Length: 328
Image (tube, rainbow, N blue to C red; front, side, top):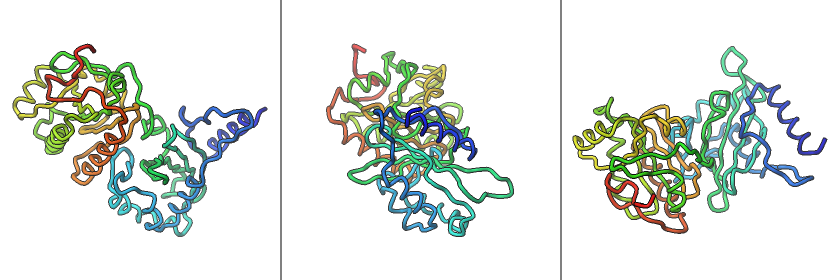
């Protein structure tokens, strides 16, 4: 048995003993013979700081322009740290503890790490609560950008840094042109996707505020190497009437079969997703409109747009040019 296979079996055995899932993506990367995937020290150092109960130590892992995506909800650095004290008592008294379990690089600037619970419990029922964390290298420093409980319900979630590739991500705009994620990547463009319940809950404050924010960003980003697209499960007639009624001239991709929703795991409205020009998921936010959270999301959009090395055909106007390429 070679070293890589022995290491993999050991990790699987540990997962079984600790009661944590072993998702499809949690596999060791392809290694040359004799190599071992030893994570950088930051993955181990983070969990030491996390379970110290010291918010100042945890805070140094959070970039102020990125915040943290906590269970697919983006939080500012301050909001994430404000929720941290709820754990400090159990962490400081060692009523619950974690260790570094396994991890691997996802591309050259993202790292996924799983931290199994090794001691203590929440409540009266013994249920291991493992953590999954995604780190991003910004400059020369690794920062925490996503974190949530790791279990059978979340093991298949799309995470920051994952490649978004699915043949179903193609659709027609209101003007009858085609748009796809593949097209955006060919044009070296990032894509900002907006999902909202535009008809059924047309007057719900969250959806209206969400659409107003997206429209503002759309105007600001005209001419930049990014496409801003609203994905709608409703018919062309319903969407046309809705946009006209609310004076919201925004590009819309029709998703009447909900293929974009299913592929991208959109389970609640409103929902924001940002994919960079390489096709990697860079940010998401679901559930509710929050001014501070949307502000952080907009900062990430700016950083992603500024990192595009080559400018393709820019998005210029509303629904009539949702896809500026007549050849596509």
